[in-house]
Length: 297
Ligand SMILES: [Zn+2]
Image 1 (cartoon, helix red, strand yellow):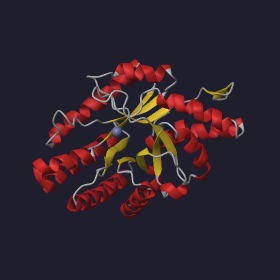
Image 2 (cartoon, rainbow, N blue to C red):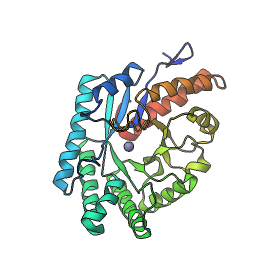
Image 3 (spheres, protein in one colour):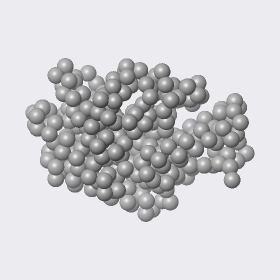
Image 4 (tube, rainbow, N blue to C red):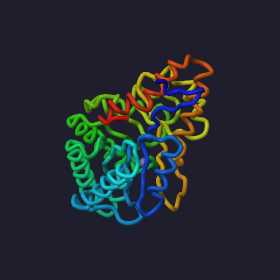
């Protein structure tokens, strides 16, 4: 049976980077996604920037437990595949330097990485993230420490055979090039090094061989169409939906992936055979995520 029926995509549709919040839309957001054709998601741990960040390992344990419970609840309520991305956010680390000092903030961050890797090893979570480095300018000393810490985190992920989702600055190809170098020296395969919130240029010249999840905002379909045949590494789609009452609909709403997949399917069909289009979209929404996270998408 074909995943394309009468020119429309009826196959799997996966959001690889979405946040949910019990105190905001939560199930209503998932419902919206599922009604539009969503079949799977990677639920990413969301730090409580406004309400106090964990300042010890026990605090991280409790915070992670909440994300893991939400994943369970969503699985129980909806017939979709839900994987979990667990880890300490680089912006949390940067914020905590002021309170805890660089040494303790870094130590805590690495403890939180260890704990996330324990959950991945136990099969409760499938990916480390979002980890990375601040996406805004910081002091030179902080930047150097962030890169050193990221190299250590990549080394830990490599040792645990875990994929990682990276939260980084947006400095075009330069960002990818630096990440590829750090990953290579840490022994982390580029296919498991996933840049989150990626621009829609997936060509090898731009990504330097890193995997990515594309933020499929306006204009992304055209950019994917133009670059997909020059990709050397797998790519997926994400909304980075925040489920945050202060930023409703940000970064992209829960309906976005099903909608963009339909649009991409239509423009691809105008240029390629149906079988080819099916293969491409199955890689995006099923084969790659299944292999990467060890779940059935
Ligand atoms: Zn995110």
